[in-house]
Length: 269
Image 1 (tube, helix red, strand yellow):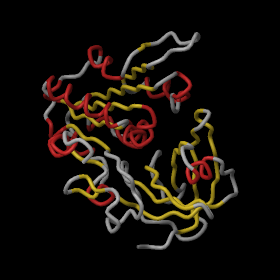
Image 2 (cartoon, helix red, strand yellow):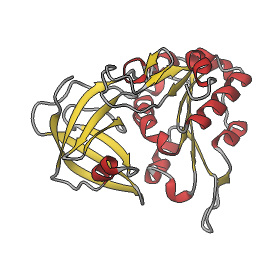
Image 3 (spheres, one colour):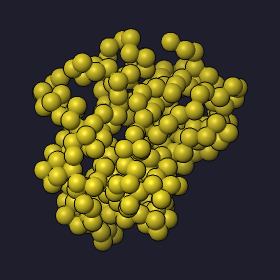
Image 4 (tube, one colour):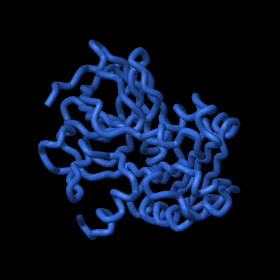
């Protein structure tokens, strides 16, 4: 297991009441380049470390971007960091999104809640190479309007991609779509046989969405999911992230639906 390298918080954006995006700059030698879909083990001194997916375009010069929700003592400590404070970072770990699988095809990105964070660098990479794809559609779902991430970026994304947003529980100011993210599929202009889909969000949402996409004719080998289990070491040694034959920190988190479907069908696997 490699030792963490010191990174400094250079920018902090409060996304929602309990979620913040941190931009980190290496205080010493930078880690090897990350790819969209991979994650880092980020250490909050002296609390401990948690896995955080890459949430922005990777750059050795600009550092790393991670979006963290405060759900426990370590993630709360990371969420509360301010510019100038330091963290330890190990990585990169895990398998990345396979964007080459979508060359010459339509891209369909479907995010539920915090799942938009790991998909954002993939979207940024796709928008930077529009000639490689025949269209980009982004479907975003969240529990409430207050839980939506990166809302200030939806306008710029809409200039180069089709973006649709829905919430489960609207407030008095919400005038958009209401319902789970799969309800947006009926209005999404994609051709299933020519589509490559990327899903990230709660497991129940990904299972339902992947099954619906397969039913509509999207090839299961072209439906990618970012799977989640408890991760402790990031290197496949502790076994905490095991999903059947897979150790998700090593063999995942990104997997295709044809591989993931039989595993996710087993209760409590």
